[in-house]
Image (tube, rainbow, N blue to C red):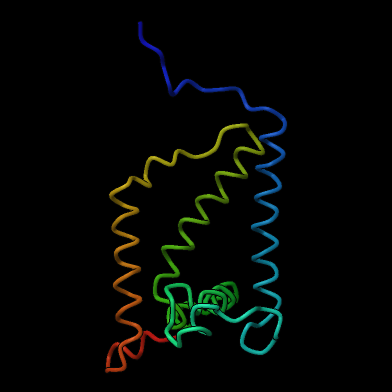
Length: 144
């Protein structure tokens, strides 16, 4: 006797409402990051890792990079954080999936995020963190 583990379960109204709330929350975060300039407005908290250690974490510069990206300044965004495209791709994919769940009850397939892909991304983020904290040229360019 075989069971189909991947059979499609009809969406409930609650799951569609949670998906809509998640998509609206993500849009709200992008709206706040677009409206407030992290370099001049003081509403964004500083990075706790950088505050405690003096070293930049893999996410340092992400808010400034997102602000620059939302204003169309792609090179400035990459200058703040080089791994921003990977993060934007993941959260953009998640956003589209949430919108589709809210609209039609079925989101995108997350099979593209295999354990191998995620491992490569996390190893790359770790190496990026080490390199961006080196005080030597050209690595010091990576510091936010």
